[in-house]
Length: 148
Picture 1 (cartoon, helix red, strand yellow):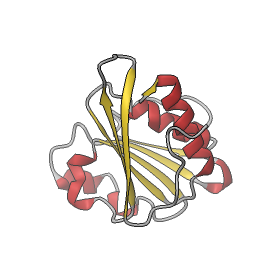
Picture 2: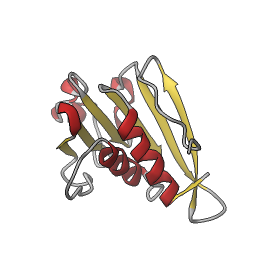
Picture 3: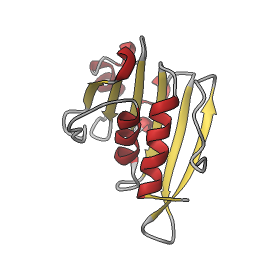
């Protein structure tokens, strides 16, 4: 379980240490912290400046350190696989890119075979989240949420 500050610390550690390309499928209910985690990963990777939610623009790309790009994508408003393709889905992660996708359920059949599945769930305490993460295929290593 993590509070928001712990979620941010974990995301920043991921961003500092993960090798690109890497794909994160961020799952959870509205308000569970998916955007918080995506922004923290970006900050850890060296993204500077404002990072608005991609809820309406759907995709934001940011320059990070070392020539890495970070793509933050929100698929909540999409209804069909065709809409997902129109976002340039086939090019995601083609180079040194960190991809963080909220609501990946909208693109389930298109998810890459190598990815991290991260689920954020509400707990009995409203300020805490249960974190479940699992490796699918062979994505690069990430630190666990409880690593100091």
